[in-house]
Image (cartoon, rainbow, N blue to C red):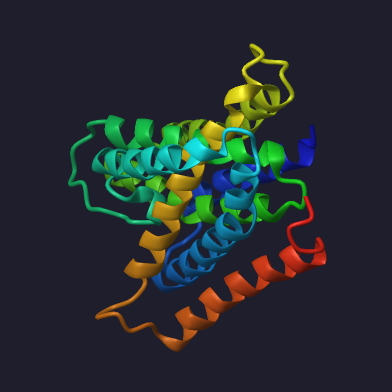
Length: 242
């Protein structure tokens, strides 16, 4: 297992969350550009890498069903997370009620997103997920701050969120090589669910980044850069050679 991936996953989310203590001015435009870039990148690598890999397995006939399950699961998760995984920041008033729905659904989402990394031979996915978790962690920290949690509590809950994607990677690594329970036969089906989640997340980010279906030049550049970097990685690996 490549330990550096665990560190990147953890610290991208952790630093994204702790940035709430450093940012005094409104950085929403920068967050939107990061989201547009990561959404385009996630969509491109899903189409270029994850879907071909999932359909290359022996149980490829059923993969479409699991992609649909993943897509619908993400819709369900967003009923509780309120779109925080897209970087949405909602005003939650002055109550100190803990946002359980947001925290649990966001952690499950991050855990599932870490799972495809066991088959990420060309490191295309690690950077997309890491980038995607920066605004999500920032939004989560913002909600906790609005709910009047102190600095130590915010750091604690951000740490829990940050460890979920590395945990998903670790579990899927065990599943894919058969060291955890010998259920490697189900790995492609799990990948199908993750693909469905990625398709929903990435397309939602891209659709939401436009007003009246018009995209600003800066956002268009961010989207094109995301797709271009995914394509560079794809062709530098000799196309779909794996």
